[in-house]
Length: 193
Ligand SMILES: C[S@@+](CC[C@H](N)C(=O)[O-])C[C@H]1O[C@@H](n2cnc3c(N)ncnc32)[C@H](O)[C@@H]1O
Image 1 (spheres, rainbow, N blue to C red):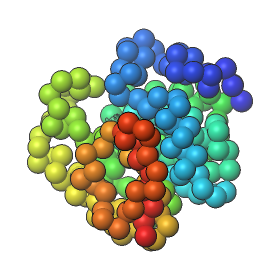
Image 2: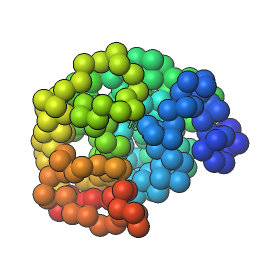
Image 3: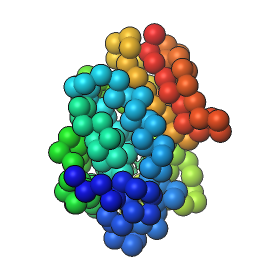
Image 4: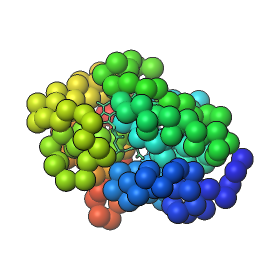
């Protein structure tokens, strides 16, 4: 295990090239948030956790390092970011994380126990600070993705855990009860009743 990269955000971000490091503050989960979220989602050995929109894999790799009894999987639509996630996972030396390149709508959510969501669809309605301009963005895509995730989460059994970070909560079904939150209310922990 290469523990040095898990000391702080700057150390972790060194796993990536400079152009990816520059996106970190705005687009990748901070180390302290990833640890807290993963602690809540890794509630029993063997749990499978899905990061919906995994970027360069920061949440999954940190979660996998600190909770080796659980499995962290990320799905990411941008090929370049998916490639960086793979490379970072190898450098970090974790075995219990993997990544899928594709749209989350292609994923069978039933294969996972718990879910992490860092406001991935917001880029469709936010004109500033997008990761790149290579995709098509629209309000209808934002609504489509949010509803799709809502339905997927709604179909999961009671006890399912969800963590949202910076979310507008349009994807959170009413059966998910808020059980914990950070003082600034940006990080929220939910359990399906
Ligand atoms: C805010 S970043 C978060 C990255 C990562 N979860 C983390 O916390 O470090 C959101 C990511 O979601 C991805 N994304 C957005 N819509 C997606 C979709 N429909 N399917 C898969 N990935 C998506 C974006 O490409 C971006 O990399």
